[in-house]
Amino acid sequence: MPNIGFDRLFSEEEANELIPRLDILMRQLQMQATSLRARIDELSVDDPSILHSQMSEIVGRYPELRSFATNMAEAAAQIESFGCILKDIDLGLIDFPYDAGEEVVFLCWQFGESRVIAWHNVDSGFSERQPLPGAPNRYLN
Image (cartoon, rainbow, N blue to C red; front, side):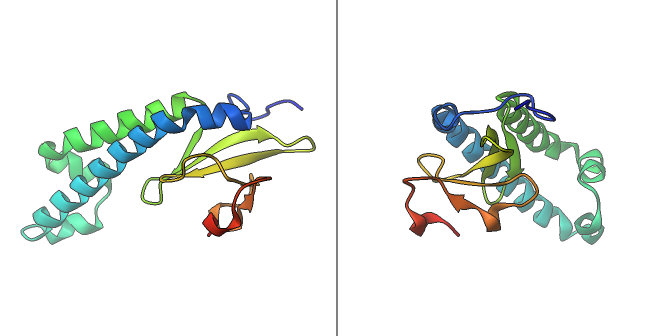
């Protein structure tokens, strides 16, 4: 099956080999996002309009936030450079395109999991993930 629309397709083993690096990058990304939000909250005391602005506008008005945004963009780019897909920073979700035989699906990893334990269809998401064979169901949803 061709990997239409994806830079690469992963095996379960290839995805699991990336988990240690993804764990570090996701931790960095979440810490930067938390710090950025905290600083925006502080700035909103004097500038309430900041809470209704686009991130690019906020960073333009407050250059001291640029390092947070840059660090986040770099971590996200590094995650995606592996060929996986960053789905949600707060939940720590990363998907890996996977050839399931009849179709391409996503292997789904959540920050904190020691390995990939689930998958879902390309057109569904985290809430519809299914356990991989041998994965414990108790960790899903």
